[in-house]
Image 1: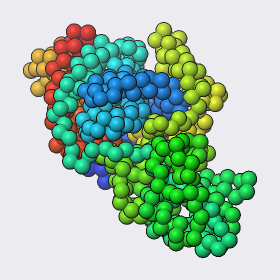
Image 2 (image 1 turned 135 degrees about the vertical axis):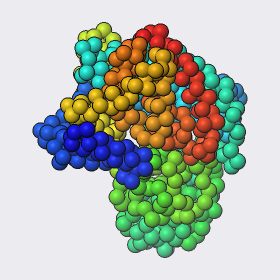
Image 3 (image 1 turned 180 degrees about the vertical axis):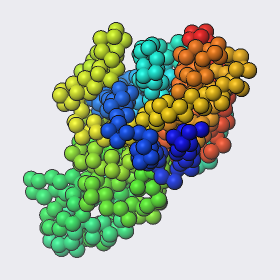
Length: 598
């Protein structure tokens, strides 16, 4: 081996260790690898960041932002509402939810599709009194399976297409080229997870009670003798042991939602208080407030009871449900230690864990990854806050957010982009960048919403790793690696080689980011294709399929991670449902790849 080959091999192995052990996040590992390659002279400084100009990177970013636009515009609201007609039929609910989620994830980000359907699944589980563990894992697997069908369904497909265009004269794959293999696997896979969902036993304590905006809300007036006069809102909440939140302040003609904690209270101020009835009663007595009428009317009865207590609804506040992503700075902290209102202009109203509302004192709750939070947030600050806190907004149950009057326009723009790619009128990165620009121009999506919707760690990972492939190619490291592997590979029949590559990608993607896996494995697979009896396209399809079929652990795919806490799953629950599904993908995938792609 030459010195350059030794250097690149050592740095690549070190990066692989970093991806697996994750002493820092995967995007930081990729960026450190890129900088090391530059310092060691393996990548020219002027070419270090050309990976961010790759069409695949642009397309991934555009599709992520477009997914947010479709969600904000309410494009899929009508379909989601129709799921309400399956009351009392859990198996049918799981099947339809999973199938629709798979269908949407073929054309939008997997996690975005999952975010649309998670609250629907939780709501149905609550209404029909079954554990959400029966529906959430099939939903997550469905979002992964749907991504196998199209070019834009998942980033590995886009990366494989970019590598094919860069290293061969075959050009990029078409929008539905992946469907020859991906669609049959998606159909069979969805049918399997729905029928086999009984393998997911109901989790103890996971019977849902739901998270809904404001179970109890009271209007209280500050009288001339109130002990709240002159104190701050934060001090008033402290008088109720932080179990009651001031969600609105009415002062004369002015109405302030999510009022700042430092605001001083005056006589005749009217406060909108949210909290459990006992806590409301204690705060009213402690601060000598005057309720408009006796408290205690539960949410949903406010129309029959005109007594000053009413459920918190969308007209009063912008109530948003969001799930804590892994790595959120909120994980491991209690609401009492957070300054959400002063820093981000939002209140934490309720927490749901494993499909049920957490009834501990708000100041005592320790937040976990996967918790569903009900937040009152100022609309103009939502994008900034959710990005900073790594929160994934969910499609709200019973609360219509966004700009639904633009739903048809958003859907039409996205359809136009798909047709442009389908009929070769424009490459994918140009077509979807144009769709995104049109959504912003038509005010379907604000620029800050578009930026916050992009998963920047994924973008950094992709942009930083593309130069590694070129360095391995130019130094001869890739040719050397292929030469070492070609001996054992030559002894295998074509179907066995394709299966081995697919299996290796499946296993690697369980312990490191699948985007990194495809960037490392695709060039190797192309080298092994020569003289193996399997075409280059066949090997690339094996890589794309293998890196996306991650069903064995909660860390294999972000969709798997997001449903772990709400569903009450443990690590061993994933292979129980996912291992047979992985075998199905392997057994179906290899013959389909050989038949359609040689």
